[in-house]
Amino acid sequence: MRCGQGWFFLQSAVFAVLTLSLFSLPGLAAPEQVIQIKAKRFEYMPNEITLKKGVPVVLELTSLDRLHGFNCPAFKIRGDVRPNQVTKISFTPDKVGTFEFHCDNFCGSGHEGMTGKFIVTE
Image (cartoon, rainbow, N blue to C red; front, side, top):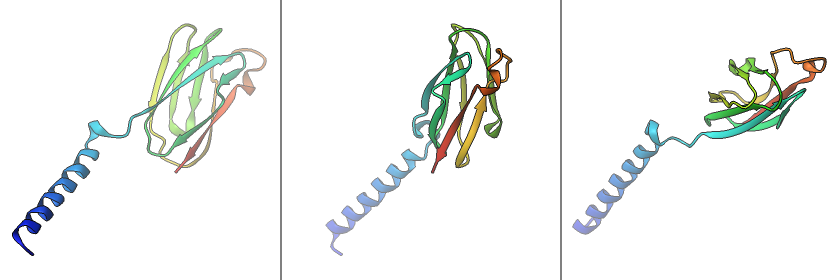
């Protein structure tokens, strides 16, 4: 190997190591996915949400009519959803599958059907 070739190889190796290091820093991780969810008697909009395993999520929940709850036992997340306020819930899906969320504040005769689901893919 000639001197110029060795120097080029060394520069390329250093560049590759630095590039990989930058992508593994906590502050430079993949951006979080922000999802806005509206709650009203007796539904969530949207009620089916697709997520990717390992990608951080911020749910921004707002009620259009009254106090509701948001509960997803599979990910141990819960929050009160109030009218004209944004409730933020952050989590990172750590498993693949379909997981139900539901209202856990009684909101009337259709309360039991106020559900939705996360579909988490690889």
